[in-house]
Image 1: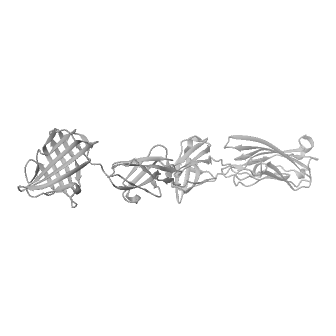
Image 2: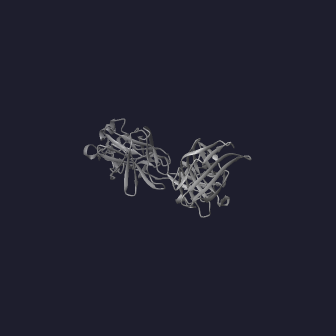
Image 3: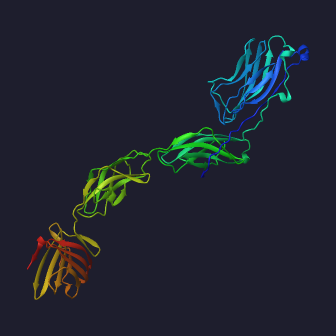
Length: 497
């Protein structure tokens, strides 16, 4: 789930309190522990909390490492000891380091000696370069031991009650730790390993990641495990930078991770598309283009094939025909073309919903049509034809013959006789009588026989072209079945009387 929200943030501070005990004048003479001053401390290293000063004759001071709702890492953490005593001191510090991310607790002890006359010394709890990581540290015990004689009463001071500096302890309810970039594409990315730590999971109402582009924040909620969840963001723009943080909402307060990730979606890389120059299997209505290829590209192409047009312009493409097999080398057949016509053919790839074409096209031309007619549901090739036209007794006649040869034998023949009472001309001739008509002299013969199937009805449309080519369109019923088709008798094969 994704939603917009205005950013708000809250820094949570941990608090600490300290209690100091030291020997009294009476205890110096009778207590065997007089040479040791116990300093009981329960101090949390906070984010931006003030340093705590511990008084014990002289004084000690603890300094806090700053950790803003994240991991303290590869940084020194120390307690500073200052003294006005003219004594040699032994200082031992017991402390614990807490790592909420890994749910670990490490107990450590460090001890140093402050020599007589020195004004200060640091007790290094975590040295720089130790590569330890923690969210906060607790000092459980500090012991300062006088290595020489017991101090005079003027050198001891008992601090209690209101004399002890205190800071109110406000515990953080939520710590948010952003995961790492797991994967990305041109329109999406996934952040994996985000973790949420909470004092009361029942009060946690929402969590996930939030990403920013320009001035709008989009929140993507999650239902995954608080111990580590993944968040996928989709519907993004290619080659665009987004700033990403994790967030959680508890008790109406929104907590954010202190760190963030800059994610730039992948840029679109167009594939290389090449059209083949192997044009083969050419007929009057079809042809095949082979040797095409599509390589590379991000994201990968979802489709590849060829496209064609009557002009050398991809804006005028008539049809896209997808290929099959390997895009590295493929061929595609194009059908339902027009006879004796030139076509421009491109290879293409479909990437991210957009067609990417080859830089060049190949020119392919269909062959001339082989004329044919259909008789009684069977197609018959027409190898040739001729005509004779004449006028007698006021009636104009045109006899048209079409035939097919099997070797030297004519095994299919159509004979048409058209008649006109108004001069020979273009028009539709109907079976029977009228100004433009034909009759049962129109026949179809099969297998070089004299078994002529006479016309019984229908129409024949004649077009007389300027070059004296005669074209007939036949829709004729005969004794042997229906005759349909179109045929043009060239003027050079015609005779007029």
